[in-house]
Picture 1 (cartoon, helix red, strand yellow):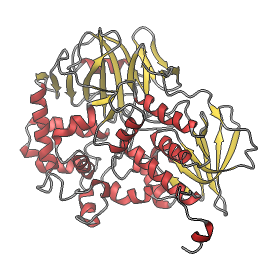
Picture 2: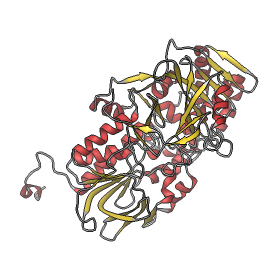
Picture 3: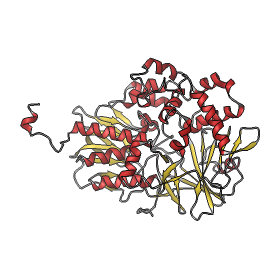
Picture 4: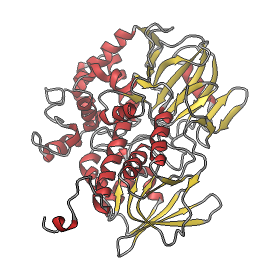
Length: 514
């Protein structure tokens, strides 16, 4: 039983055939009161660090800062914590609206789960003895049923051929995926050459080795992973995924789509946030940032705009900015961002995903499937809903911009689900990340040539503004793990620069001699 009460957020959508589309879903992530800033003239106050954004990057950074005794302020545009990772509580059932799955290979994430008593509070998406335990494959020539093993073996064979670009399952090109831009085993120029290949280029190299079904599974798996078309996605992105999961497709399910927090990601996000508040964090929600300006003395001023249009300015010695890549263009920076970073922002990344959940009658917990091409690409039976008389279905689409707008045609989502299996749909629950002004897309996956041209620039600081987001993480980019990586690293840098005294710091006289 969660210690939190689910309050209605502005985020999220629900559709039923009877009531149509409604906006706003309950979640443990809503913060009340919305603001907690101790009374003091804001014009005179200079914070040690201001953190922009209460996703996992910002939460980890803010928590680490106040734990070290730093005077930190957290500003968040939404009414809740979690950013692109949050869970909704709808009629007694938990629905993960964004980032979902956890794995023991995500060391930072599991350390936080352990810290807050959640390491054993996990459940599986897959149900071994669930109803409809088979894989439906519809590639345009009619729907067929495969056993889950047949589908898994077919997908793994295609993936192995796909990633075996170097004859070594990707190890020769991406031996150290946290150091993709070059390391002791591979040069930057070698990596850059591979980064010029698209996933389409690689598929054409191996097309004659694949069956028609294997080709369809591969061409649908790439947009399922990153919501971009195979013509655009950089093949290096897939090699990084292969390396991070241990150079084998056999771990794909365990790493990517199997385990999740029983009470939802918002439970973990709240525990990090509540811990930070206990340690002295001050905060303000529903506080979108308008501009970030640094003066000649190095003080950074952040101007925010409230719902009514009134503005407030906060000042700090250092700022940790966790605003996503796709939203940075909406913020005024002075001095301006570098031309190369501006170019990277203008081009953007590829993840324009649609993720939906449905409550359907009966037991479909074992269902898996792929429709290609289709409005929705993959489906997962995701356990019983509350009451155990209906099933939670989770489904993903690739980039449907210009083809399907779930806010305008939500009934088409129900039609698309029927291609996987006949089902009586009670409700559909989702968060339209593309129309969300504080995300405008999912987490970042890169197009051909993007990583080697822009990653290093995106990771650079902008004066006294530290740029931190999973969109440019060194390791698990686009994952919760990558968000936590970025938050922890930014907090460490800020602490080093604004000053922190250890328990055994030598006296001033001794320090002057060092």
